Length: 325
Image (cartoon, rainbow, N blue to C red):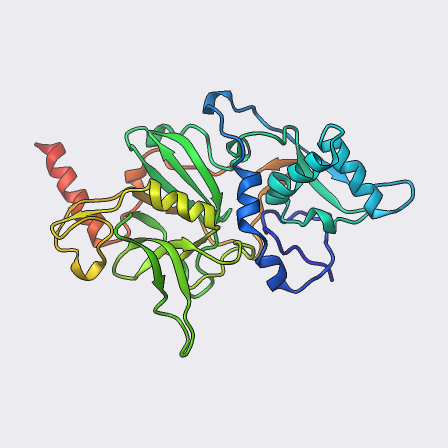
């Protein structure tokens, strides 16, 4: 049985089924190269085109898969085979969850109407979030599609894939804030004699020790962690530098929980929404034979999301008092 093992971004009947290899080979895909392909373009948000999608079935009169892929490379690359290969191994692989080189005649993938675009063109999150306009920064995780988004005053700054907590160790839903961060941390759940290294760690639930962090393998299996939120390296680095941590009487976000002191100011607000998918998260639905990207629905008011910790409840009370006065 042939399985998707690159980026489990969609679950569509009839999608391509690449040749099986060891999962470790796939999960150790070159993250740096993927980041180069995904984030090569950055445009003004209002200039990013709207994207539609269509199915493409790999075909060639000879029945040869290599020749069929070659024709697809030419089509997507406007006649340039290498450019087409790069475009396909970027966002198209990201959306379909396939290794393009593993496609065979008869396999079907989803192709966007525009491929060489700012990655926000393909986001399941809205580009403009009116409810987030009063937040200079807002971080959202949606477990149903296993993806994250970063907003600046309600405008989408970046998005990517995640792997949240598996059944029995689910990442909690609710409203949180980023707290402290560390460049490197060893997981307290490491088995005896092993060291589970986490890098670019940013905590958002201090009592339970739940963080976002880089993971050596891409988020390929949907909800699979022990409660923390796994990210590809480039995304974890970006969030580490972008988000703000708490300000405390004993220092800033780079001082750990044990020495935090009293919290003076909360960090960037974090919303964890949605339910864990049953298996591979779906990113498209079929509408009359046409693939349609599944869109994330965000709350009208981020503060309507229930507080996830005592920290949030305490600052909610302070805000209520300020409003009343």
